[in-house]
Each structure stands twice: as C-alpha cells, then as structure tokens.
Image (cartoon, rainbow, N blue to C red):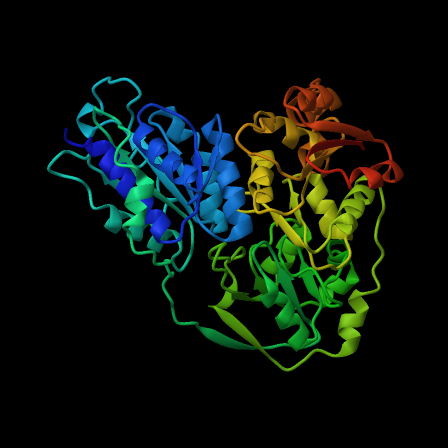
Amino acid sequence: MSKVPSQVFAADLISEFVALGVTNFFLSPGARSQALAIAVGQLAQAGKVELTVVLDERSMSFAALGRALGSGSPSVLITTSGTAVANLHPAVLEANHSGIPLILLTADRPKVLRNKGANQTTQQPGIFADVLRLMIDVDAPHINSIPNASNLARQALSHALGERPGPVQLNLQFTEPLSAAEPNAAEVLSEETIQIFQGPQTPISEIDVVVDDRTVAVAGAGATLAAQEFAEKANLPLFAEPSSGARFSRFAIKGYPKQIAGPLGKEISRVIVFGKPTLSRAITNLIKNSEVWVQKSRTHGHFDLGSNSLGFADQINPIGRANDAWLASWLEGEIEADSRTGLVQKVWESTAESEQLLFGASELIRKADQVVSPKKIAAFSNRGLSGIDGTIATGLGLSQNGKQTRVLLGDLTFLHDAGSLNRSGFGDLDIQLVVGNDNGGQIFKNLEMAKTLEENMFEKLFLTPQKASIEQLADAYGWKYFKAESEAELEPLLDQKGFVVIEYSL
C-alpha cells in the first residue's frame, strides 16, 4: 500500500527542523493540520522534541513567544486552517517588533478552494501582511510531487534567525487523505544527519562618538549588556528600563524620569540610545530634543523616534570620558513612594539572578522604571508593541525554560488573558502571577483625557472597573490562590512553588 503524501511530507518537514536543532514545538489541535500533529507527536514520544499542546491558538502563540523570548531559540507553531491562523496575529506582531524567532506552520486547504465558499478556507497567504521575515505558500503534497522539506526548513530557519530575527510562515496546503500512522517521523529523523543550524554572520559597523559632561546613555527593551558596557567605558549615567538587560551596576540611575523633567535634564545635549525605549515620556521628549546616536538593535529594529538621529551602527565606541561629578549628580535623586512602588520593589528584590521576571504592559512596569534599584536580573516584557495581550501565556512559555518565573501584571492585563490560565499541556512549572489590583485602568489617569472628561465618562471609557473574581478564576483553572494586603503579607507568598496567583490590593 502506498504511503499517504501528506504524512510523508509532514514527517520529512518536522524531522528536518529537528535535525537542524529545533526542539520547541507548540500545537493547537485541528483537522487540516493532523499530519503535522502526528509527526511532532511521534517525535515527542521518542524524546526528540518538547511538545506543548494548547487548546486555543492565541494562548499557544504567546506561550511559544515566551519560550523563544527566554531561550533565544525558535519556537515552531502548528495550527489548522481558517480563524486558527488569525488568532496568531497579536503574537506574530509582537515577534516582529521584538525580533523573536517564530516559525508558523499553518495548515491550509488547497488553493483551488480559495474564494469558492469552501469551509474553513480564507486567504492565509498575506494574512500577516508585511510583518513576516518570509512567507511561502506551499502546494499540497501528491504521490509524485512532495515539496522539498529540507529546502523549506532551511529557508525558514535562515530568515527566522537572520540579521534581524522574527516570524516566518510556511503555509502548508493539504488534500485528503490528510494523515496516516506511517511513516513514523522518529524513524525518518534517525536517517537524517544532525547539523545544528547556524544563522548568517554579517559584518559589524562601528561609529566613534565623543562623550562629555552633557551626555547620557539610554537603554530600552533589548539593549542588552552593551549599554552598560558603554556607560562604564564613558563614565556616563545610564537610564535603563527594567527589561533592557542593562539595569545593574552603579551607572544605572533609578528615579531618572523625574530628574530628566527637572533642572538636571536641561543640561543634557547628547543621548546614546540602545534598544527600544518606550516607558517614559520624559525619555521620549529628551530624545526628540537632543543630539542622538543609536546603536542598532538586532531584535527591536530601527529606532529614530524624533527623526533626528545623527548616526546608526552595530557598535558605538565612546571617545573620552565624562567627569565623575556628572555621574554623581544623577545619583542624588529622590524616589516617590506609594503602594505600587512598594509592590514592584518587593517583587524585584525577591527575584534572584537565577529566576525570571516578566512585566505586563501596565502602570507597574512604569513604576519599576522609576524606582527599582540596579540589579542583575533576567527581566522581560513584551515591549515590541507594548500590548497587554497574552501576558499570562508569555509567562507560561518563559517558565518552560526551567526557571522560577514571576509575572507582575495589573488586574486588566490578567483578565484580558484569563483563558491562558488553562494549565493543560504545560506539565509541572513554577510560575507566580502577582496581580496588582487597582480595579481598572488606572494608568489612563496620567493621560490627557483624564483632565478633560467628566468622572463618570472617564471611568466608563478608560478605567473600565471589572466585577470578575480573580480568586474564582484561579480556582477554576487549578491555580493556588493567595491574597496580600501589604508588603509584609506578600513577602512569604513569593516563596510559593507551582502554579500560583497572588492578588495584591493597591
């Protein structure tokens, strides 16, 4: 009996990815993708890959993003056709703007059924517009025409891990019969030559920039250690966001947003930017009104917020050093304290270097930007588009890297992704969701409309207080639930293991 072409191709393709070093696979069940599901299931059963099966594609895609964010290795996502593919869109947008390698294997009906009213058939090629590094619409496999799996896998990895990493889509058409038990993908892999894929090497550009006592360094998301190294060489104050990877050592200044808005900020004339700074309007205005040089970010793309940058390079080298007095003047700032700053400081201080901390895109990360002390910590946040989408799922994916993980998020961010509380498919993890509950979108109180709208209208349109019970949601999905009213009550709860939700009243 002849082999089913769909299963032959699926086994070849998945085993090719594994042979090239890809091990993290994510799947949401569906009919059109069944050959892919069987192939990756066979490899998982053989212990060759880690497979996470998640009920819905939106949660699955953010979990895959979190896994890739923490590991630096690409995640492969498998979906069926139709709206399943559309549900990947928020995570794909974030991956694009954050330079996170995702490989989407989107199963599809054959193209002859497009625009014919066929069930679960839409225009999947192009659904992600221009945010992909590569999109290939792959014809359905037939007995005498099996797509070249090796070529497809190598192209996908080359673009996902290219000069600027990001999402790739292989849109895979399948016709009936859709699957079979053979060939077994684990047996196909055993015949492959294992060769870990190496991304392309590109020349590094450099610029030398003069620094003086009116120069500062700014580190946004994805800045990495390079920002701190530059500040140290140049003896400069470093304004480093919590998820920059550079907020440590004596050069990282806490309380800088308030200081920039004061007299000291007026003395700045030159800014060296690393990564993608997004948290503070004070930083935004500073960049727009200064001489700016940018060290290009491999992950977060081109940054020229004020269209005033004088130069871009892969590496910026300082010429000269600022005087000690310039750095010292920035170390004298005062920090404002409130219930939110107390929460973020306690969580930050309780997180060890061997652990992980994910910030939701809410008021809390901005408070952290203002007050947390310099500390070497693995801190993350979805700052590509700064959305609250999928924060719980991103945390689950991060925690799959085997480290204790805390997610610090607001109540609306928690409720927005409540469906991702579903633990099914994730096994045993150590993850804490620390929910700062201020009963709505308090962050909007800092924006213009808070001063112009009547109180009732402002609450309805922007604060949007919710009636959902965080405790009952946690219980429904099998998470341990705790509530804290103070820092003293919170501290012992941060030692809890397993799937933990801590509600903190603000």
